[in-house]
Structure formats: C-alpha cells, structure tokens
Length: 444
Ligand SMILES: Cc1ncc(COP(=O)(O)O)c(C=O)c1O
Image (tube, rainbow, N blue to C red; front, top):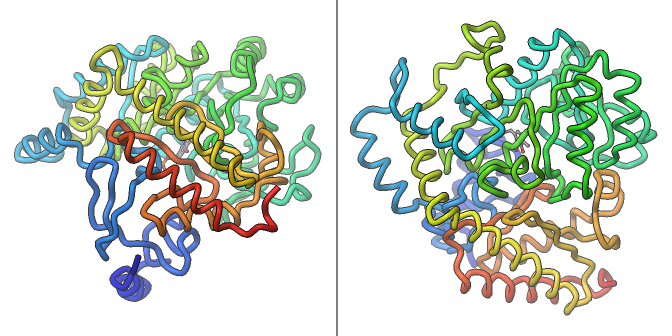
C-alpha cells in the first residue's frame, strides 16, 4: 500500500491547517507520520487519495449506522438540496423527524434539535441547573461529553498515580484555557461503583443539579455497565432529587432503537443524542419529558443557534430512522449481530495467536484492548493495564491490509448495515495476520 498523495497533501496541509486537519483525533496524533486523506466512501468502504480501499469500521466516530453514501440518503439529499439548505423558520421535516423520534423513545415527550453532541450536552447541563436551581453537576472519570468547559474534567486516560483515592478522585482539567470557575462546580466520581456514587450523593446530593453519564463508557474503548448499575444510579437520583442525565450521543439510535435507555429500562430526565442520529450530517438533540423540556421554552434556560435543525440534515435523520426501523427494527438487529460476530471472532483470533487482546462490545460498538485482565469494567483498570501503543500497532497493521479500525486508541469500532459477511471474514483474517506479526515477547 502506498501513500504518496496523502504525504503530499499532508505537506500542503501543514502550511494551512493546524496538525494538517481539523481535529486532533484525525491527524498525526493517531496516524503516524501522517493520516490517510480519504477521498470518498460508499457502503462499508472508503478510498483514500492514493486509491487504497479500506473496509471501514471507524465509521466517522459512529455517525454512520447505514454506512457511507447510502443510496436512500443520496437520493433524498439530491432531491431536497434543490429546495434550499436552510431557513430561519420552522420546517415540516423538523416536525416529522421529532415525531419519529418520540415514537421510538417512550421515555421522552419532546425534542429540541442542535448540531453537535457538545452543544446538546452544554444545554443539558444548563437545563439541569436552571430547573433545580442547584449549581453542581456530577460526572464520571473517563466519561467524555464534548468540549464544553464545564464538562472538560477527567475525561482522558491518565497515569493511575495521578488519579487520587477512588473516594475522592483528583479532578483533572482536560485543557488549558479553562477558568477555575468553569469547572469548580463539576464533581467527579468513579463509574460502575454504586457505593462510591451513594457516598458522593450523601455528602453533596443537596447541591447537585444532575448526574451526567454515558450509559456505556465509550470513550475508553467499550466498557459496559455492571449488571444493575444503571438502574441503581437512576434510583439514587430519585432518592437524592438529582436529575438523571443520560448522554446517548454515542449509544442513541445505535445500541437499540431507544438506545441505552431501552436496553436497560431507564427513564432519564434529560437525554442527549448526536452522532448516529444525523447519519453523517451534524444533527444532535436534547430530549426529555414535558416538565423538563419546558425549561427551554422562550429562552428561560437559553438554547439558541443559527444552524439548529438544518434542513438537509433533518432529511438524512428522518430517512435513517425510517430505514433502520423498517421490518421491526431489522437495521438495529443487523448491526448488533455484526458487532457480536466481530467481537466473538476477534477474541478467537487473539486466543489462537496467544495475544492478550480482549474485545468488549455492546451490540454494534466493539473495541479491542491489549490487557492482561480478563475484562475491563472501569476507567482505572483501563488506565493501569491497557497497552495503547500495542493497539496503535495493531490498528496500523490492520490498515496496511485494507481494514480501517479506529485510529484513535481510546475510541471504539462500529458496524453498519452495509457490512457484509465477506467484510467480516476479510477483517478477521487481517486481524489474525496482524496479531501474528506482533512481536513474540508481547504474547501471554
Ligand atoms: C458521549 C459523548 N457525548 C458528547 C460528545 C460530543 O459530541 P460532538 O463531537 O458531536 O460534539 C461525544 C463525542 O465523542 C461523546 O462521545
């Protein structure tokens, strides 16, 4: 595989784009010495500017449940673009899309559209504070909710020695440029540990507006919730009168039609969606029951945005929801089955080659980590035991064989409706080769 054109583009890009791209995750931080510049995608495949073809399991950070350039999406967008891209008033497609969402999500009454997960999460937190009049919020170590200042705390992997006692995690800001005040009211707790949460709520419950969490830790590979954990969190929220804010930016419209809330039978107070919702267009949403959503009426709690509810994106969302729901949600069943098969067979490939690779998944979201533990159930084990460099080596070896696994070492891989059995078989064969090529001294 040669990358002459990508190299040339990277040289040009470095003169005009920071890191040669528009987000650290896409550039040399994860693709050394330079990223493959992608020219186009169709179905489960992408092609770079050198003509190299890849089976894509990264799928635009989870934004493409129906893969690239799905014919239905292309048809609808081609037809609708001629009718204009954006209007500063309300749209029929906005109503239709919200109706579809509400019909799929029994725990919500209303939707407000935004553009990105970050904006939605920023609004969710503001709503929680506005509704309760309380100032503090509680998030979890290793959970990421976008790049709003108040949530940029303890989201990245760290040396365990810097994390402090689990009863009182050291809060680590994720960026320069944050004022102390912006995260002063952001408490941090360890995740997947009911007692730890109860302890924090006993001391601070009366000051906490909401508990914000991912239902599946998905910015540290894929770490599922322990059995009963999410229900216990919900019950504690009710007991301590703290709003339960489930951030389904990754899991929404992916792990099940109703996301984590459906899978685990939850009734969150505030929910945010993004990624898969837009099928590649920047569409996000804040949702919840009426008594919560009325808080943003007429700017009581402010949520504005020139680009909210972009017309073409909504057509993509509506089409995606219709297609994925067809035949009793067959699309969701399909992507989950593919994710389950990938997980099982990657684990088998690891066992066959004696590598300490473990793959965890929730349906269509799966991720290989290199660790000597049998299972990763929390952030601290991830930080302490997972060999990220080894994953980087593995994903590079996969890419060299035309299989695109997440370049970002802490994110995850995903399936879409367009992955075929041949894609799975080819990817598993490539994984076997990659694992074989990895150095002997790293085997168990
Ligand atoms: C759980 C979660 N919430 C929020 C966000 C932010 O979404 P966006 O990148 O669309 O701003 C992300 C992004 O990865 C996420 O994983």
